[in-house]
Amino acid sequence: MKRWMTFGLCIALLGTLAACGNADRTNTVDKIPPSTGSVVELTSNKEQGTDGLPSHALQQTDWQKGTGFDPDTTAILVIDDYGGDYYGDTTPEQSYLNAFDIVKAGRKAGLPILFVNDAHLEGIDRELELWGEHGLAGDEASQPLTGFDVQDSDYLLVKRRYDGFFQTDLDLTLRELGIDTLITFGTDTNICVLQTLSTAYYLGYQIIVPEDACSNELGVGTHEDVIEYFDACYDARIVSTKTIIDEIKAVG
Image 1: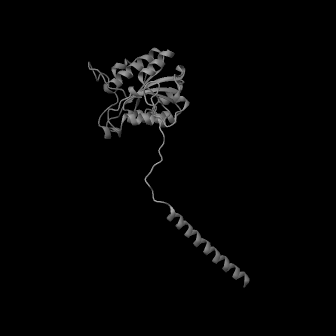
Image 2: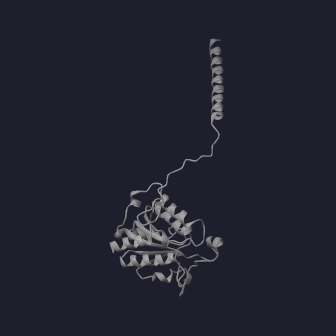
Image 3: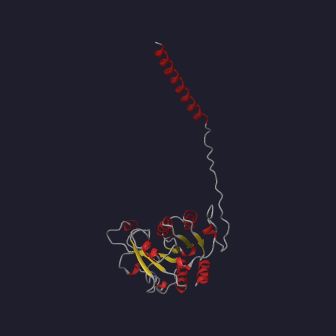
């Protein structure tokens, strides 16, 4: 009998504790003040860098604060600056002129030059559904712009998606060349450059982006926001064309 009374008291006690616990939780919820809509602000380091460009990242790494690079492990990667003789006798946009100058300086210094361009399969590639016909495999317009003056020593790779690494030989080629650092730029900043740099970061490459050699022709977002994203999320060192050419000449 005593055993049953003890068991009953335990059950009653557990019930009381549960009720108290629920009451406490309810009271706790009731005591949470309504949101004021305020957001904790992170302090940004957007002061001017040494080359006059903004320092975007909330916190910069030693790599981003540094200068120069090892020429033995660095390559220049040009993303989707294609069109063959698209401009003819007309003057291309400044971003392309900057890209031509960087490649010319890099080639003179003996840096490997790699181009990765669209080579879509007509009627198959999903990207064509979004953007229409462009960059078709075998088309002269899918070749690097003539201003690059492509040489036999350059590497031409093709891709069928935004990302220059996806289902291509880009990573294999870079590894076989002993490359761990990329000076990279191209078109479109917010699409193919963004996606390619994402994988480059995941694969462990150090990244240098001459932001004035990139262009945002399709208008998806803003050029400035994506450059800031490269800085904050991909540990990219953001420089100007002038700065990177000076650094290339220093090692050439």
